[in-house]
Length: 387
DNA sequence: TATGCCGGGGA
DNA sequence: TCCCCGGCATA
Image (tube, rainbow, N blue to C red):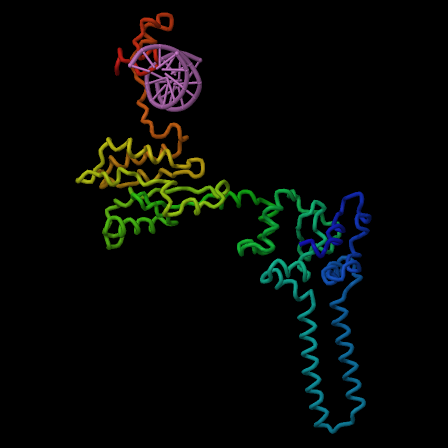
């Protein structure tokens, strides 16, 4: 954005020792250096120095010309009274038009609407913000017109480094960067980080049905999907027993670390979060045996990029007691989810819990290692003192 | 930190 | 297959 305002950008260096030498630009002299930037510095100087009140001059000049016209007309034309009043009516119209025109071009009038409705490009350019606040480190900032009366208004305290990556794209960026001035100030200069963090996690709901993996943004949507597509129920959620709760999972996408979270979670991508195979291996009565644990967890854990997203486990236990018949699966899924949150190495292995009983090591001690069972010597599961 | 033991590698 | 060990999970 500094391309056509290079001189102005340099001139914006307030504290640098080379101010006025870097490019030979002093603030306030920018208008004479770049033909393309004549309007912005003019507005810039408008309040600060009072030297260049071009819009108001124009306004005054217009009114003066109008007055002269009126005088000329009224004096040079000797018309009948009726004709004269008609002339006056015309002149009144012209006057009104001129006044309106002048008012509409006056920056004092235009500024407030600029703050609300205009985009950033028009804002600073037309007087809403000044290019003089372009910092020496090369980042745009701005100040409200009311601040322009103080030439020494310091730059915002926020370091420009943290501000640049977010601010610059906004000039041509998405609409949500089109923030109003106050919001922008608070966002950019006060606490931008919490705001960003707030938006950095995106909660999605992923269907766990085999070969589906559909991802929806709402729980209701995924429930409806499961109910209608997989469970074959065409009724509303009223007739649901909540079984669909077990066929989707809630995932949190960290949009900070995932460049394009949804692209990696394409509904047709089975590599990200494979639906639990155990789902289709449900026993006829709808329950799942623990024997499905291995077949369920292994493919999930091996393929899940657990570093990229977190699996929210809360609703895994939100099932009402009426879901007790699927509790086995609930437990299985909770284990699956835990696996997803773990490093890939630990996944897939259902490491049996550490035995409580004394093992050869404890019984015989390290000094009597030759008395250990073979398994213990080999650091395998003890065969002598089996739990 | 100590212990149990899985997974993997070398012989 | 035997043997050993790195490394992880758990108490």
